[in-house]
Image (cartoon, rainbow over the protein chains, first blue to last red):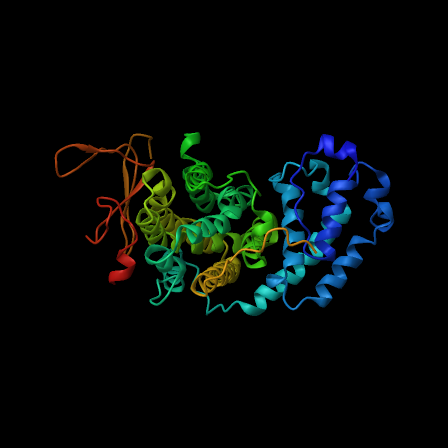
Length: 362
Length: 61
């Protein structure tokens, strides 16, 4: 990195996890998106290999896109170009053809893998109540060990901090992935999504914005609440959960999936959040730290009804051809969130960290 | 629906969703702060945060 870049981009650069994330990171940091040569995919500057070729190699060599740290970090950075969530990324990269081409390559492989792994049952009829009932069946609480029960009863302070760090990738930008869907919807489903999102974004009160409530929880636990502050520490399973949301949200062709994702997300939130709040208080913290979890017990009991009946049900009734994708998105949400939760609980039960080690450069 | 008109939606096997300006009075006769524009009232009796719903009905069916 040159002195000039250090001056104008005092960025938290992040650590690459393999050749693809290294190439994406290097491009975002060192190239100029306004440079005509950089815009020409074939003539990548600074003598680096063609990004698409590196992506092709990474995808061909991967054992699974959803568990591949290198690919998931690259995809996360590519989405950050659109969100603006990492301030060191120049906004001009958002529509850069070479980056969009690579993002598309990863997305196709990721979506194909999710459609292969996700189990979707028979689609309900195109009736809002039938769609809602089928979603409540799909997301019904299950007995047995869970991360929420572990946090409620057993987690140490360090494990609670880790859990919050893992959640921060989504929650410090809570609701944003689903907001991409607003202009793609109409009628009842749109009204429902905006009603939910308005509540997520504080209902007119910035201090009640969920991302801001979560930031207070992080600070209360002595953690860094800046977005991406722990990006280097979160594993592929956590990034995959976030990236799937971004992929469903940002691609209009996946409108059914992002709607199903939000429904499943809301429908599996109230009960676990009660247990997270219990764990927070068991460890001696007060309402200020528990606020985020308390808020979600109450808010998501409202949101799940709106999401199931009016958002997913309304969309399914208006556009029956999207019903299979609504259930694909819902089931993908459950699968990816379960994988992330199982990873964290597995590490905790083994007395290990669920995070990547610090300074683990490739 | 006019802005002042209250709408109550009965959710199958779930809470009552209430939209509009309502005041909920607690057992002690004091008004309970409405936490959000749309609220869900428990109607299974099992919620830990009554009068609001907390999703517990899903565990008791």
